[in-house]
Length: 461
Image (cartoon, rainbow, N blue to C red; front, top):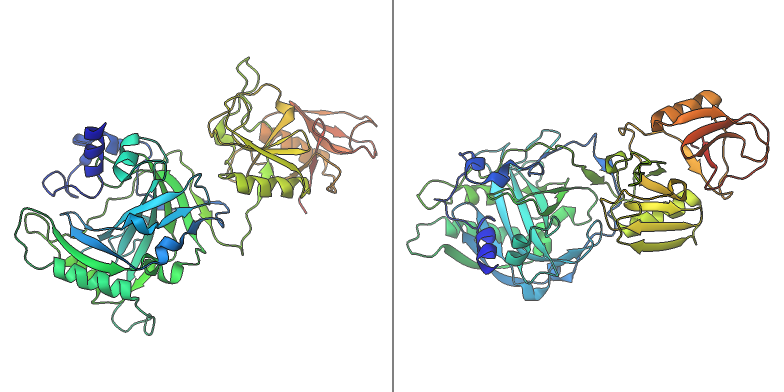
């Protein structure tokens, strides 16, 4: 295990220049670099799923002055933090605390290129990666060796270089950025010795966030390391607001650094990779509330042969905290019962149980449960899903239901891929209602309430 950990940790941006470079095809020597969930990716703002990450926080350790070492390792400049200061992140889609171990940078040989991720096809001049590991591991090496898909959490910040006195004129350049520039300049000077060139410097990590410390915009997805062996164990958080860098400063200092054979370290970024079947989430801040929807039969698939749902039909809510908020919203019940679990035989993620309980299942791949009408998955509202129905589903009398037409009820059934029939009965709610596995339309004027075995399909307000 110790040997495996050392091997994997060497495949973070720590390895010598002789092992790989950015001009070769990595998959020949590192098969995992051809995997399905690789990073970086292009972040499409039009298709990203709105999510609520307001609980994601950077703790006090980010605000404490600390001394650490900046090193030229032949691929990048890497700063190793003093972990005793306790810098970490938690909340949002993270189910644990993640400890900061190091940060490193990627940059281009000229302006307009250098970032690893792109947004709507746009590249920035550089990208800074704050690398955290899950707190149940002893250190970064152990986390990297684990192979767990959420072993690491990396916060990526774009670097946007301007000319010396352009549109960023007057914006303060934090002492940490100035220290980083001076250290990078000193590391670029000739060095002889068997060990990597290292420079000690003081830093306040929060200053790396600069103007984006309010966390008003970020993308999140599951991916990989962006250097060989490209292990798929990273929870990525990419800030959408870049850190502005004054021209002829930090970026110039970075470009002066040389690799082990004396060539400039430039364009040390990996091209974007295919998204494949992954989801990208976007948190835009409190000004744009996230919306949710009940999706009947979204993940229903019982081992006895009933149902054919798949996880892909539901954009799963990522945290228990957000699940409770969604459940209260959709039930209009602030005191609704809430519980959490990790099981394989109930729906993944967030769901309503009967009409008076909300549950969150940490097992994100569960889709085998027996009685479908008892469970109603709650998903992020995403019109791009093929089974998106666009209606409010009501299963209690806390919410007024605006009746839809018979043709709209037929459309609802078609979207879910279920049967449709007329059912005129005074003992059931009026209009369109759903009972697994059929949508019914009741033409009678009744006062019967909506409930979990007769879920009303209503027009959105």
